[in-house]
Image (cartoon, rainbow, N blue to C red; front, side, top):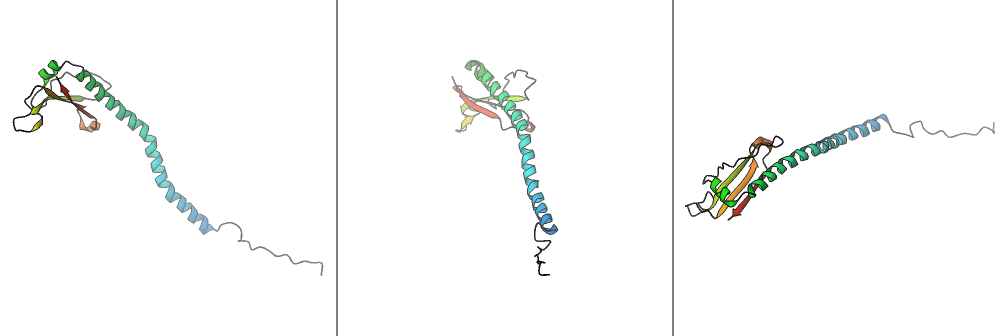
Length: 146
């Protein structure tokens, strides 16, 4: 019997993970994947949102360029003291509704300088989206001199 050698056995649970360790690892992964999935979903929606915003800004900028191409005398004739303008906005089915404000800029009789003044040497011109629900951060404003 001396030919029989004793072999050491490794315990059966010495290699691998226990069920508790595996469940803990899976739960940590699940907790970390929820914010990552939300961030991914938001980034997938971003191109559509930015394309819509770029289209709206382009509509406002195009109208501003059209208004500024008008002769000063015509803009002065359309200017009002309260800022409401009768400027005819061209119909464009691809653009949301826009509004144009043309006001006299200068001393408004109270000693304050700003839109609604009485001078005719400087005009306050503003173009914006008409509906606040369209997201109205696109307001372009400038002063026009004679």
